[in-house]
Image (cartoon, rainbow, N blue to C red; front, side, top):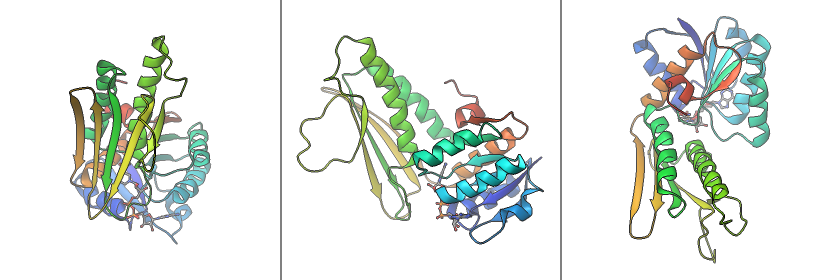
Length: 255
Ligand code: NAD
């Protein structure tokens, strides 16, 4: 039985977690914390803190979990580089599962995106389109950034393996396009963010070649998909050695 604290419980994801917990065997909610509440008061009773709050919220919870030797599941997105570095340091002391997206489908999309980019090769231009509800605060989404990192890694290897150095430009993510941008370079990975209504989360990777195009799309229609993935991670992480883990580890997917 994993004893969890739902951190950011008043939010959309916090509520989705609390809705899913009763039907999830092996999870007991021992605390709920949001802005203005004390995590310290309830932390002793828990094995793991499940964080869907804000980047500042993650940092507060991280310091306390590191101090108390408690595991963390981090679902919050939009951390700065400095915050991300602090999470990596914290993972030297406690086990942390951090995922930009806890759905099984998106984690399969990550794998498919890598394979497809490898198979199609550098002749296909890579673009990512993501869509979320009007209340989302960060852009591009954490999931789109993870997709861009995966595709960048593939492209870097492909360019390194050919004699052709693409104008000596590093592969880089380009967020949206506007104005006189010039022609598209093969080293670009475009990312485009749509915000509106109550869209739960959609991600498409476009592989655009000459005369053909492949598109891989994932659409989440319910936050329960993220919540159940995070609960699975909360069960999995308890008792693991210190380290920074991903959903690939939790699901046992190939790298
Ligand atoms: P939300 O704004 O509806 O909820 C966030 C909650 O956290 C609010 O109740 C807020 O009061 C609380 N909070 C903020 N700062 C806090 C702090 N310092 N201490 C305690 N509580 C604090 O947002 P949401 O849609 O539930 O999303 C939360 C985060 O999770 C976002 O970063 C979002 O991008 C991310 N998210 C991740 C996944 C995933 O699968 N990894 C899925 C959905 C959303």
